[in-house]
Image (cartoon, rainbow, N blue to C red; front, side, top):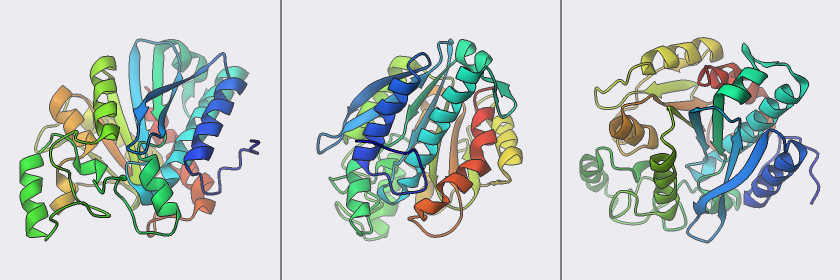
Length: 282
């Protein structure tokens, strides 16, 4: 399967997997292909790793089916890192040689491939194939969230906002949490859409460096620092990472509009956030 690496189109799971492997073949000196596990329906949860440094930073996209454009953004980021390293150049204000030698950049472009494929069929679908919203399936305020869920009339699997029976009940979240526990990244950045906002901290916990990093990312992107409210305020990946490890966890709500954002906006949204993504590596 051939790709012209135009990122301004819909990437389903087959495209994400194929492009991930093609990038690793093209930039084999810099990029490694791996997997953190499988989805409910057995789809590979692809992992791209750049660099060989001790400080590890993890980027995760497509927690939500309708937000599959975040996979495009992270694949673009991987290619740009590799191209800069191959050319001996810079990405943003960082020398790619420094990043390769001093950092390990882990990228999971599509954590929810089943949900993305359902959403791409024209269905309003944020959850995984079990009807569980992965970004509420983490052990951070889970009990409080279940109360809010009941108050909202959500009683079981649904297209969005059902948190599952217990934290990490889903193979996608369990696989990611296991990988994080094994690798102990210094920082976590989750890409969502949309709103041009950046979140950090959880329940009054602000790890050392988190506010500074979020501020730098906001300045570089023009996005605003904000705080999720209501049902969005519990159970998320960056919430769990903040609570569990007391390290910087960041959520970027990329782009503006209504989900799903048009894939034709991929390059323009990436150009908004590239410098912010690099800040997480410094």
